[in-house]
Length: 554
Image (cartoon, rainbow, N blue to C red; front, side, top):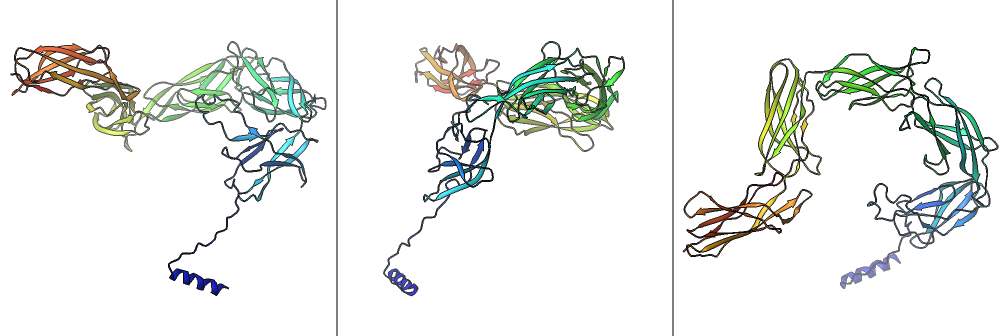
C-alpha cells in the first residue's frame, strides 16, 4: 500500500499536480496558559484573563477526600469592582475579567475540593482537579468589644471582653461562635484570640508600648477585633480607641556628641531612649519604640531602649533625632554635631535663569571639607528633560579649592536652552575626595513664541505713500508645547533696514490684538526690509523675530 501511494505521488508530481495532504485538527485546552480559581467562604471565583470563557464551563465540589461530586455550579456573574476609584477613578476603563458564583447553599459544613471543567477545542472534556479549596463554615462576626482598664507605659495590660457569632451560610442564621479564632490588631501587630464554647472572649492583653498615638488630643491606642480572614476595616469586626494615661517625660541620650562622614553620606549614630518612671528613676523605653532622624529614616529601640540610626551628612547641618507620635511617652529630641570628612558637595540651592534669548545660566555654591591640599574640583553641568529620569552632561567646569575648608561659587553661563527640564551642578568626585550632594534646580523653562505671519504692503510702493506692516504673535503653553495660539496685549517692535546697509533701525511699536495680530502704518521713503520683533518679552516667555520683508520704493 505504501509503494502504491508513493507511485501515485510521483506520477502526480511529474504531471505538475500538487496533492493536498489532509491534516488532523489537534485537541487543545483553550485555557492552556492557565487561569485563577479561589474561594471566599461562600463563593467560587474564576479568572481566565479575558472576557471569552470556555464552553460549557462548570465547577464541581467534592468533600475533602471524596471522589464523588456533591454540587455543580454552572451559573456565574462578573465580579464587581468593590472600589472603582482605587487607585484612581480613571484607571477602571476595563471592567475586569473575573467571574464568581452566587453564594453557595450546601447541605453540610466542611472542607470541599473545587474542580473546574469545560470543553476543549474539539469539545473534548477538560478537567482541572483541586483548583481551589472551599472552607464552608460559620462566618464569624464580632458583636461586642470592650477594653477594660486605662494602660500607661509601666502598666500596659488590659482585659479584652468580646462576643462573636457565626452565620451559617446554609440558611443565614446566626448563633454564638464556639471556639472560633479571631485576630486582635494594634498598630504594633496582630495577636490570635479564641472564643469559648458560648462565643465569648475574656482575656488579658498586654500592649507592646510601641503603638502610635491615635488621638488628635491627648494619647490613645486603637484595638480592632476581626475574623481571621477579614481585613482591619471589615464590617464583620469591631474597633475601640482606648485612652492611655498621660505619657511621662522621655529622654534621648546619644553615645556621641559629634559624627563624621563624607558629605552627602550617612553616619551611624547610636543612643538610648528612657522615660521617667513613677518611682522617679529613668527606665528604658519599651522595645520597638520608634525614633526618627532628620532625613535619615527611622529606627526602633531594643529591650534595653537602645537604638542605632543613620544621620544624613548635609554639610554641617546639625543632626536631629526625635521621638514623636508615641501613645505612651512625651515627645523628646536630641541633636548631634556633624563634621564632614574629606569631601565636597553643593549646598544652599541652585540659582537658575533662562533668558528670553534661550540662554541658561546656573550658579551654585560648592563647599569643600578637610582637603589635605589645594585641588581643582571637576564639576559636571547636567540636564534632565521633563518627563525623563536620565541626566545628560551638557558642560564641565573647574573649581579651585584650597586646603582645608572652603566654599566657592560655581557658574555655568550662556548654556543653550534645550527645552523644559531641571539642571544641576554636580561635583564628579575622586577616590581621595568623595562627592557630596548636587545642586539641583526646579523645572527651568519659558514659553515659546513665534511670529509666523508677517507682511509689509503694498509692494512696490511709491515714495511718500503709506506702507503697512501686519503680522501675528503666537505662543504655546507650559503644559502643551505643540499647540499655538495668539498672544494678546504684547508690544511688538517693527524695524527697518535700508537696502545696502547692515543696521536695523527701530521704526515703531505695535500692540497685539486679542487674537495676537498686530498692524502698524509708516511712510515709505526708500527701498529696504521690514522686520517684527517680540523683544520686550514677558518674564516667562521667549523672544521672537519674524522673517524680513523687502519692499521696493519707487
